[in-house]
Length: 207
Image (cartoon, rainbow, N blue to C red; front, side, top):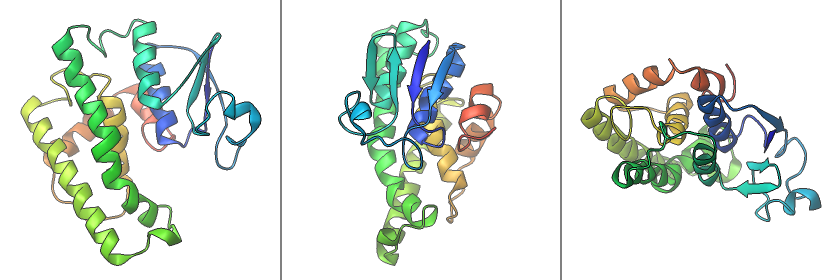
């Protein structure tokens, strides 16, 4: 059986769990990370030298990096409905997954650490204000894309791209900050809540 190593509260672990739910794929999860088994242990570093979750073990196959894991799972377990084989359709999914991992993740990092984690190292008012503006700017890019598609990130159908981006949208709505009106993002958030996998794993790891 597929093993997922990582605590359920981790946003990157939840990507994997939600994908498993979409694929109706059984798995066993083990708690690793802050507050649980140390990712700096010799056993874990043998699996992922970066000491980060998630890691999967699928038989004798070990893989880390959350978006790579998502792509592997849909390719290995019949997820073409989430990750189409047609090059242009697949490229559009990849484009938005990569955007989430770089631009969008980078935009919310400081604000999340400041406002949710209350990190002492992230309490500079000017840096926080700049981070909130940058986060809102990136969410406006998502708003414009969702207005174009009228449904999901890469088009009319739910795709693999909606998993990492959907988790980021949850983080946007769960962080206590002043948000601009983004009606397409709001409608998208409500649409995602209709999916069982999102209800199980998309909302901070709690149903």
